[in-house]
Image (spheres, rainbow, N blue to C red):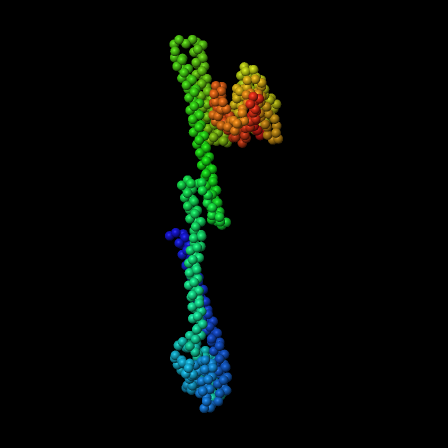
Amino acid sequence: MKIRTRLALIFILLMIFGVTAVSSFSIMYIRAFLLQSGLEEMIEDARWMSQSLNQTELTDQLHDELTELAEAARYQLHIYDSTGNRLYSGPESISADRNLPDYVVSYFEVSDENVMLDDDRNDNRIAVFGKIETGAFPGGWFSISQDEDLLYEPVATMRWIIYTGMFISIGIILLVSTFVARSISRPIVDLSEAASRIADGDISQSIDLNRKDEFGELAESLNQMAEHLQADNERLIKINEKQRQFFADIAHEIRNPLHTMMGSLEMLELDKLDDDTRKKYVANARGQAERLSQLFKDIITLQRFDSDRHFIEYSTFDLSTVFKRACNWYQHLAEEKGIQLTCDEAPCEVKADKAKLEQVLDNLLSNAVKFTNEGEVCIRHEEHGDQIRIEVADTGIGIPEEHHHRLFDRFYRTDKARSRDKGGTGLGLAVVKSILESHGKDIHIESTPGEGTRFYFYLDKA
């Protein structure tokens, strides 16, 4: 059974029960009220009848006077003597369904009240009794009675009104319950359909319930979940595309060194090679092998940082010692190219991973020396509040601005042919970015083609 049907049935049953209970209680209350009011009126009429009978005189017109008195009171009047013999019964226009029981005279033996109610009646008539002290029937007593149904005549009209209103109310309840059940279940159905669409992968459509209640909050949560899923999906697509490009670049980067190595090995198999030529091919093969070794080393480094960006061993050390060590690696190459390599030897302590910082400086200095043909390459630091700015600057060929946003992508080269001729794996700057991101820092670049390039980043001061 659908929830809409369940809700409608629950509303209908509850409302019908409520309307029926209220209607029944109303009828019972009205009957009790009419009975009580009728009894009070009969008692007052009995007192009035007692006073009238106490003033009657025994004349020839007594029967007619009693009949007029009974008709005026609209009751069945019975008069008895002290022994219980019925002396009068009338008027004939007000008929009694049954005769009053003969034992009612005993009521005067148990009460001092002048007027009494026949609570032990066995018929559907209500009777009130009273004493006659004087007049035409001294020492006697009388009773006035009427059909109980006469008291309840207004109830029939009220019952018809109440039952009519009840059935109308039930009809309205059916319509309202159906509408309410539909209004409550409709958002549930919409949310269920939306959840099914999301489960099937359709996260492009949003749920617009335009409600301010819990259903609206749930719809907003589902919309947020769909947005997050869509963002994650787009991110996964980009990651997959990058991964595909990454493997394509690896294959391309490996193929060229392998071709060079295979060509060198084939030439070394020739018998008539002089020593200088043989050494040349051996050097070529060794250089390509070292290039492949560095490539796989960089790939392993990137994979390590991708899987654990918190793999950092912090320590406090002096930057000047790291600068000197890095400059010593490239001093010979800089002298061969006729460029000046300088480093800042002022002591400055920072908190970072020393080995990985050396790797960062190694990659940055390697590129700076490689792409600088004249001028200088320098590495320096300066204090900025609680941080230290580290900068590697050169006067080399520079990098056009359109390449800046992709410069740290893996295997990205501004000039693929020239870069590959100069060696390198195309992963150096990607490794630099990964190491600094693991420190919670970022790498920045300022470069002008033909004037030089400046890379800089910040580390926490010890």
